[in-house]
Length: 205
Image (tube, rainbow, N blue to C red; front, top):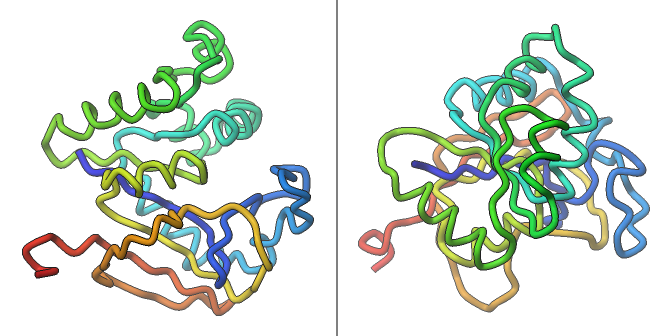
């Protein structure tokens, strides 16, 4: 199975709270909702829809899952919302119970936190086949996935704004990780819709 990170990201690498002011104020972050003025339904909406069409499961950290679980069930009847509600979902959490997860947002399975979650994710990824697990947001979890070489594709909507600090999906461990640019498209709002894949060890030599 392939793990794909899908993020709205500022030019300086911040992914925190793109959708709303109160979404994630950790660290005194004051720019919640920064991504919304740049959203182009025609190109960005189509890219998100295309990504979902090839996705067989979603993977979240606890905070992002909470935001999604509070939003999507109430939107039932919209085709995209129905897709979000029906697709299998995994959430990495040390405190969320299986019963609470299933009652709040159907088709959710809880993975253990920290190392336990990474081990479970390794097992999912090792199942093989062409299935795709998509990670939306979930900066802390995404960073752990990058650190552990568990990301097969990056789908990044690079937005023309500098936020001056905030949560990122990129590790700061000093290790270089070469990527291949698979595709790029420009939205009307000057967002660059980029798809990258890690360079294999053979290619990088």
